[in-house]
Length: 164
Image 1 (tube, rainbow, N blue to C red):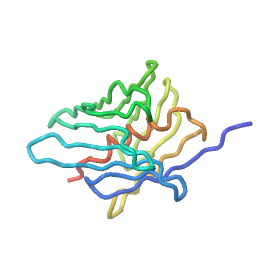
Image 2 (cartoon, rainbow, N blue to C red):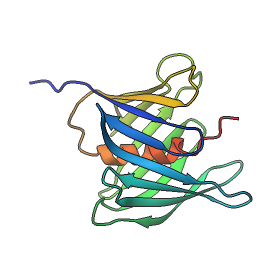
Image 3 (cartoon, rainbow, N blue to C red):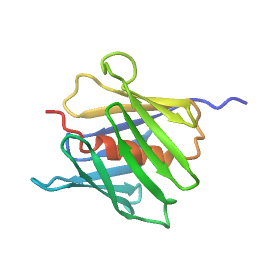
């Protein structure tokens, strides 16, 4: 039996965090604490408001993420979160990683494609004309085992995005 595609809705306001939903059920969300002349803090929460991760984001010309806290009772060890020009990656226990590859031309096709073990497993689209942030994340298979890590990567990457 083939797995069906599944689509998640992600929305929020600019520079203030995002919420991930399946149907109308909240799955995970982020909050952002912006600080002038200092590192911004991104907090990632599970649906029950339990803190999963605290990430410090810094850098002007290159984005660097430092893991300040992670709840080992709710998630396995997140080793690193990395970002380059058109790619973001989360590495976690067992030498596993998930990568988001962004489109060089964001108005054509999906804004990012999702890869696990060099295989495309889904994509992310953003609503082009919107007052707030409105994304859809579509997975090719409904039962992706490491979905929480994908959500964490997306929330860290997009929650504090500057759209000026």
